[in-house]
Amino acid sequence: MDSLTQAALGGAVGGAVMGRRAGWRAFALGAGVGTLPDLDSFIPYGGAVADFTYHRGYTHALFVQTLAAPLIAWPIARWRAGHGESYRRWLLTVWLILITHALLDAVTIYGTQLWLPFSDYPVGLGSLFIIDPLYTLPLLVGIFVAVGNPWRRGRWNAAGLALSTAYLAWAIGAQQIVEHRAEAAIAREGLAVDRVLATPAPFNTLLWRVVAVGGDAHWEGFYTVGSGRPIDFNRYPNSPGLLEGIEDTWAVERLQYFTKGFYAVTERDGSVIVTDLRMGQARFYAFGFRVGERRDGRTIARDDARYEYPRPPMTTVFRELYACGRGRPTEVIDC
Image (cartoon, rainbow, N blue to C red; front, side, top):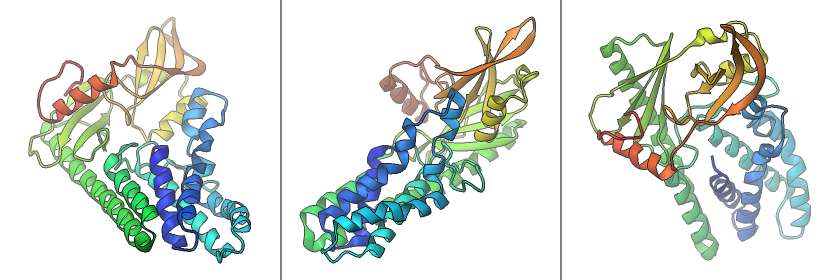
């Protein structure tokens, strides 16, 4: 999730665990600790694919966070010594803030490596968009009112946490509904697919984008919860044969693993591009990578590099995306 949301969640957890012991400082310190795992964004890993797939790695691993919690809690407890705040209470607070950060990230689609160093499997449910005001606002309102009203601090903060958690549960349930409808639509149209995924459109959990992958094509469609409209899929070509000769390179294998098979292979300007289909939408994907070059009818490996898809203004994309969700034709988005 975005940094504001993680800071809000950290502040809310800090205020809930510390209660009245630390006052507003529990919220402030919680917000600061809640953003610490995302500092890995500033670590270079040596290449475009490595930077993409190693993000949300060790700093988001539950085992590593458990080891780090005492080191972070100790200076806080020392600073707050004499205020009736025990080291054990701060240790619990810091630990809960860190693991809730990682678990919330795992509900988005990117991929969070919760189980390092035992497994680098990227957990990504895809139930929430990376920025969702309906999740974040209850946390912020609960914190702001709690800080300004010490006598009802616990009640307001708890209410914010409860509402955001309920919204998260709704998002997970809505995703299951959409994927069930998508599978029914795929069966009805007789599409030969290997895997299906539904992810929310930006800033909401009512409009969902559905991606299906199989063989030499992938399909995309949109569904609005409660609309009752069928999902109309658009077909896009996929050319996995372009990877012949470089299929064993680290970059290709890493992208195949990290995307869980939701990727497309295309040729653009003589380069072989592997695109993560989970983020963005057709023609405007968020992550594509040059992994090879075509020479004399063969694919030659090259140093991986980011491929930037052309993108119109985001306001245009969002406006037409939601028009698509209402069943209206657009000039930018393929509904």
